[in-house]
Image 1 (cartoon, one colour):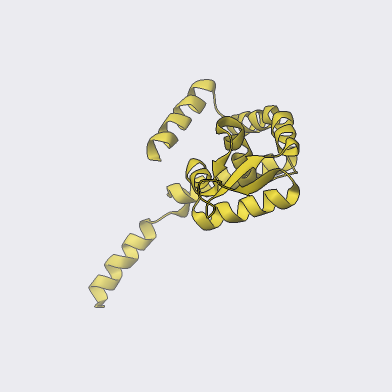
Image 2 (cartoon, rainbow, N blue to C red):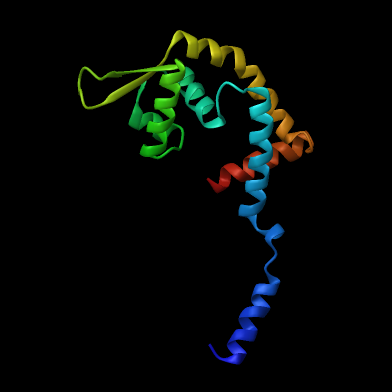
Length: 148
């Protein structure tokens, strides 16, 4: 790299400010949300709670479909389901139509945890958005949804 090209790249680098980068800001917001969630709902992680919520909403699902319904790749959903199974919140069974397919369902304990903690989870979302007005919170959710 020549001297001029190096100076230009350093000028570009000096213009880069971490605090202005969307990924960095989103990560900081996520960290804040995760801390609020963990303090309010210590039994499970946000990812595990998402699986419980989706199963409560749509019923038993194949592990593959459940992964898609919760925006998790195959390896991630497998690990989450394994941990939730060990905790007693979900059960897995072979699909009678295709024994290679694993069906995941809520156990009574998982149903109870979701039912009891859903209001707390709503409060966690409200706490995460508390620095915003209602209109700002609605706009933020709409804009973030547009990015997905």
